[in-house]
Image (cartoon, rainbow, N blue to C red; front, side, top):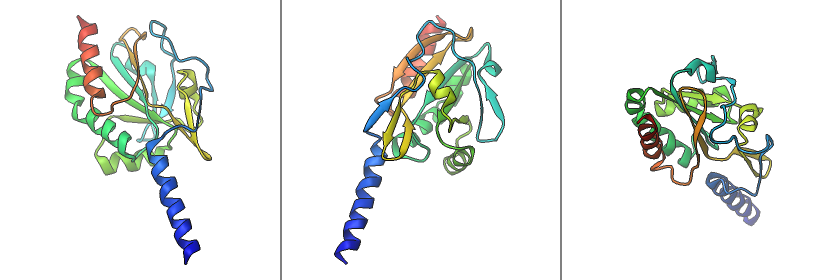
Length: 184
C-alpha cells in the first residue's frame, strides 16, 4: 500500500511539474533566434485540418507566429483562448494568428474541437520551424516542448517584433497594440 502511494504521489508531482514547463534543460537546436528586421523564414506545416499551411499563404498580412509548449495545458489554453477572443480585432488589422507546437495534427484537432479554436494550429513534431526560428526546446524527462515565444511578421515578410512570453493573460493585447502602432 505504501509503495502504491509513493508511485501515485510521484506521478502527481511529475505531472504537476510538467504542467509548469519549467525547463530542466533548454536548447535552441536551430541556433540563434530569428532576428527582428530579418526576413522571416518561410515554412509549410500541417494544421489541425491536416492541410499544409505556409507563411507565403499570408503575404500582404500581418502574421502572429506564436510558439507554445503543449496543447490542452493551462497556460497554453489561456493564451489560445485570448487569441481566439481577439480574432475579430486581428481581422480588422489585416492579421492572422498561427500557433506552433511539437504536438501532432491529431492533438491539435482535439484541442481545437474541445476549446472551440478556429485559428490555425500547426504541427511541428520534428521541430523544423521551431529550429528555423531558433525557438529553444525545454526538456522535462524524456519530453520536449517549445518555449513560449512569439514573432510578429509584417505584410512584407519581415520580423518586426519578438516576445519571450511571460504573461499569457496580456500577451494577445500586447501583440494587438504592437500591430496597431506599427501600422501608423
